[in-house]
Image (cartoon, rainbow, N blue to C red; front, side, top):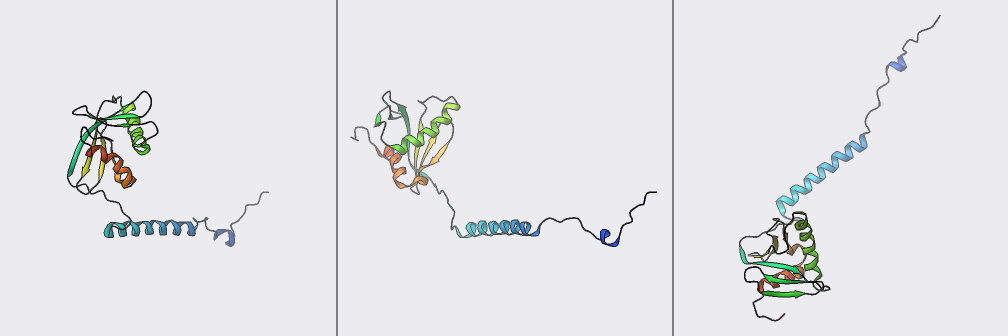
Amino acid sequence: MATQSVPTLASAGKRQPRFPRLPLFGALAFVAVVFVIVLFGRFTDIGTVRVVTNAPTDIRDVVFLPRAAGGMVVTDATSGAEIATIGPDDEGFVQGALRGLQRVRKIANIPPSQPYRLIKWQGGAVSLSDTGTGERIYLNAFGPDNAAAFARFLNHKVGDEQ
Protein backbone atom coordinates (compact mmCIF):
# COMPACT_ATOMS: atom_id res chain seq x y z
CA MET A 1 0.00 0.00 0.00
CA ALA A 2 1.46 3.29 -1.11
CA THR A 3 1.31 6.20 1.15
CA GLN A 4 0.59 9.59 -0.14
CA SER A 5 2.58 12.47 1.10
CA VAL A 6 0.48 15.00 2.81
CA PRO A 7 1.62 18.58 2.50
CA THR A 8 2.97 19.79 5.75
CA LEU A 9 2.81 23.27 7.10
CA ALA A 10 6.52 23.87 6.39
CA SER A 11 6.36 22.92 2.68
CA ALA A 12 3.08 24.76 2.08
CA GLY A 13 4.56 28.11 3.10
CA LYS A 14 7.62 28.03 0.77
CA ARG A 15 7.78 30.88 -1.74
CA GLN A 16 9.15 30.81 -5.23
CA PRO A 17 12.66 32.30 -5.51
CA ARG A 18 12.51 36.02 -6.28
CA PHE A 19 14.61 38.13 -8.60
CA PRO A 20 17.62 39.50 -6.68
CA ARG A 21 16.87 42.99 -5.43
CA LEU A 22 20.40 44.46 -5.54
CA PRO A 23 20.87 44.23 -9.34
CA LEU A 24 17.33 45.51 -9.87
CA PHE A 25 17.88 48.58 -7.69
CA GLY A 26 21.32 49.10 -9.25
CA ALA A 27 19.83 49.14 -12.77
CA LEU A 28 17.08 51.54 -11.71
CA ALA A 29 19.63 53.83 -10.06
CA PHE A 30 21.78 53.76 -13.22
CA VAL A 31 18.82 54.75 -15.40
CA ALA A 32 17.91 57.57 -13.00
CA VAL A 33 21.49 58.92 -12.94
CA VAL A 34 21.74 58.86 -16.74
CA PHE A 35 18.40 60.66 -16.99
CA VAL A 36 19.57 63.38 -14.58
CA ILE A 37 22.88 63.79 -16.46
CA VAL A 38 21.08 64.16 -19.79
CA LEU A 39 18.71 66.76 -18.34
CA PHE A 40 21.64 68.61 -16.75
CA GLY A 41 23.52 68.74 -20.06
CA ARG A 42 20.40 69.76 -21.96
CA PHE A 43 19.61 72.72 -19.69
CA THR A 44 23.16 73.95 -18.94
CA ASP A 45 25.05 73.02 -22.17
CA ILE A 46 27.84 71.63 -19.98
CA GLY A 47 29.28 68.45 -21.44
CA THR A 48 27.44 68.83 -24.73
CA VAL A 49 28.72 69.55 -28.21
CA ARG A 50 26.75 71.76 -30.52
CA VAL A 51 27.60 72.49 -34.12
CA VAL A 52 26.48 76.04 -34.76
CA THR A 53 26.79 76.62 -38.46
CA ASN A 54 24.69 79.71 -39.15
CA ALA A 55 25.39 80.77 -42.73
CA PRO A 56 28.34 79.89 -44.95
CA THR A 57 30.97 82.59 -45.48
CA ASP A 58 33.14 80.76 -48.00
CA ILE A 59 32.38 77.80 -50.26
CA ARG A 60 34.63 76.03 -52.71
CA ASP A 61 34.24 72.79 -54.63
CA VAL A 62 37.53 70.92 -54.88
CA VAL A 63 38.66 67.67 -56.44
CA PHE A 64 41.30 65.45 -54.81
CA LEU A 65 42.89 63.31 -57.52
CA PRO A 66 45.44 60.61 -56.65
CA ARG A 67 48.90 60.79 -58.23
CA ALA A 68 50.74 57.77 -59.62
CA ALA A 69 53.70 58.34 -57.28
CA GLY A 70 51.40 58.62 -54.25
CA GLY A 71 49.82 61.63 -52.68
CA MET A 72 47.27 63.74 -54.48
CA VAL A 73 46.62 66.88 -56.46
CA VAL A 74 43.99 69.33 -55.20
CA THR A 75 42.21 71.26 -57.94
CA ASP A 76 39.37 73.75 -58.09
CA ALA A 77 36.32 71.91 -59.46
CA THR A 78 35.03 74.94 -61.35
CA SER A 79 38.18 76.26 -63.04
CA GLY A 80 40.35 73.12 -62.94
CA ALA A 81 43.21 75.19 -61.54
CA GLU A 82 45.66 73.36 -59.29
CA ILE A 83 45.39 74.51 -55.69
CA ALA A 84 47.98 72.26 -54.05
CA THR A 85 50.01 69.10 -54.42
CA ILE A 86 50.15 66.78 -51.43
CA GLY A 87 53.03 64.34 -51.24
CA PRO A 88 52.58 60.71 -50.15
CA ASP A 89 53.93 61.46 -46.66
CA ASP A 90 52.45 64.98 -46.27
CA GLU A 91 49.20 66.19 -44.75
CA GLY A 92 48.35 63.02 -42.85
CA PHE A 93 45.02 64.34 -41.59
CA VAL A 94 43.88 65.45 -45.04
CA GLN A 95 44.69 62.08 -46.55
CA GLY A 96 43.17 60.19 -43.61
CA ALA A 97 39.90 62.14 -43.70
CA LEU A 98 39.61 61.63 -47.44
CA ARG A 99 40.36 57.92 -47.13
CA GLY A 100 37.21 57.43 -45.09
CA LEU A 101 35.07 59.40 -47.54
CA GLN A 102 36.63 57.64 -50.53
CA ARG A 103 35.73 54.26 -49.06
CA VAL A 104 32.06 55.28 -49.07
CA ARG A 105 32.46 56.59 -52.63
CA LYS A 106 33.93 53.31 -53.80
CA ILE A 107 30.96 51.38 -52.43
CA ALA A 108 28.54 53.82 -54.12
CA ASN A 109 30.47 53.70 -57.46
CA ILE A 110 31.15 57.44 -57.50
CA PRO A 111 34.14 58.55 -59.61
CA PRO A 112 37.13 60.32 -57.99
CA SER A 113 36.51 63.33 -60.23
CA GLN A 114 33.27 64.13 -58.34
CA PRO A 115 34.02 67.25 -56.26
CA TYR A 116 34.00 67.69 -52.51
CA ARG A 117 32.55 70.89 -51.07
CA LEU A 118 34.56 72.81 -48.48
CA ILE A 119 32.49 75.27 -46.47
CA LYS A 120 33.61 77.81 -43.90
CA TRP A 121 30.68 78.78 -41.68
CA GLN A 122 29.95 82.08 -39.91
CA GLY A 123 30.77 80.60 -36.51
CA GLY A 124 34.25 79.63 -37.77
CA ALA A 125 33.52 75.95 -38.34
CA VAL A 126 34.86 74.25 -41.45
CA SER A 127 33.09 71.31 -43.06
CA LEU A 128 33.92 68.93 -45.88
CA SER A 129 30.95 67.50 -47.80
CA ASP A 130 30.97 64.80 -50.40
CA THR A 131 28.74 66.00 -53.22
CA GLY A 132 28.37 62.43 -54.46
CA THR A 133 27.27 60.66 -51.27
CA GLY A 134 26.03 63.51 -49.09
CA GLU A 135 28.44 62.63 -46.28
CA ARG A 136 29.65 65.63 -44.26
CA ILE A 137 32.50 65.99 -41.78
CA TYR A 138 32.78 68.95 -39.42
CA LEU A 139 36.54 69.32 -39.35
CA ASN A 140 36.72 71.49 -36.21
CA ALA A 141 35.81 68.39 -34.23
CA PHE A 142 39.38 67.19 -34.91
CA GLY A 143 40.99 70.39 -33.64
CA PRO A 144 41.85 73.79 -35.11
CA ASP A 145 45.06 72.64 -36.80
CA ASN A 146 43.29 69.86 -38.67
CA ALA A 147 40.47 72.20 -39.72
CA ALA A 148 43.09 74.69 -40.94
CA ALA A 149 44.67 71.96 -43.09
CA PHE A 150 41.50 71.96 -45.19
CA ALA A 151 40.63 75.67 -44.75
CA ARG A 152 43.82 76.64 -46.60
CA PHE A 153 42.26 75.21 -49.78
CA LEU A 154 39.47 77.78 -49.38
CA ASN A 155 41.84 80.71 -49.04
CA HIS A 156 44.21 79.77 -51.83
CA LYS A 157 44.20 82.11 -54.81
CA VAL A 158 45.23 80.88 -58.23
CA GLY A 159 48.91 81.64 -58.72
CA ASP A 160 49.81 81.61 -54.98
CA GLU A 161 52.88 79.55 -54.13
CA GLN A 162 52.52 76.82 -51.54
